[in-house]
Length: 489
Image (cartoon, one colour):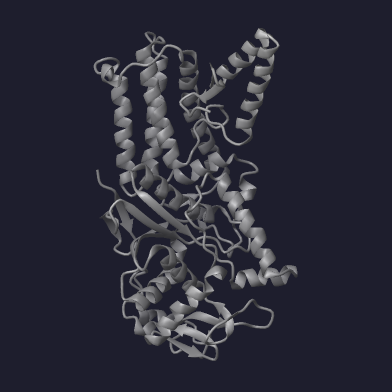
């Protein structure tokens, strides 16, 4: 099976062939930390997480870099408006970013570089561009000369001449061309600043991403992600300055997600029609919000409404009900035992075939440009087959039926892990943090009861844990517990 990716650069699906066999390097444009991020931003953060999860599922070793822009005009304005330092703004909203992506089940990136930590890399890159004649200095500022890069516009499919004609000539008369863009800005009074060969100042937004991505991923890497709104000028400028500096292709596959619309308009802070993720998760569980965001193909626009979120909530409930039904049967039959997989041939072969077929369809859908809409439909089809299987008149708990249901459960867990959706959220089959501590506390109470020969209390704790999917085993080294279909503790 072959993964195919729609490449914005070529405007077609291409067979995915990473630069280094078995390894994938991804860069994603992260937040400018001056405010809480909204649902449209959330989609741009979930898409690379989804891609990373699936590529790891398919056996690749993934390095994922997502930057934080922590020096920018918007940050400076926020600090000025609130009468605080730009560092305080950055600290507040960086913390909020990490809190919010955790709610959405976004796995930690390999590294989160910050622009202010890479000033020396940025200056080195700008010096290279100046020395090669691709950039020029004016009064302490440095601009990229677009006319020196003939393929400018190749990502956004725009013509330099038309862009120049349409640009406002009064933006900065010091520019050689209206669409030249800033690489370094001399600082105004009260602004953050760093020493450079040209002035005390700060980097432009575009050069930050080029410097940070190449620092961690090399001069050419596999995948660059971001929202459609970043294609021009941000990603176009990244390509120009990076390829001008290195003489090499910058990125092999460009992946851009579609907008989230409200009343037919893109959700954005500039239009004022946005909802911060923090607002939304006050009314809807984060798991529901994530399902809403991955239910459509990442390149398709999504219409935001309470109706759509309610639909996602009902969809998640149906899936969780099927998984819960499997879990209840597995708990009841935990002592029955297992059978070898090769003994399943010819026995309940129809249901076994449905599970195998679900895996094939799921992988085929995700191989086709990460089509989560197909993946979600596979989940619902499998849930339907599970319901038919366990509700059939001839169903009874035996080793064969249990082994088949374990296979189905494993499929649900694998699919949910790829999509970043917990299908057993709220159950006790997957525990972490304080929940693990609670189990350990109950086991200590049980141990105390056993020492006092209070066998009824000890048995009550053991049986109660079993009912919620926790199996307790007494060993010479003490009690051990394990989650149903989980790891031992």
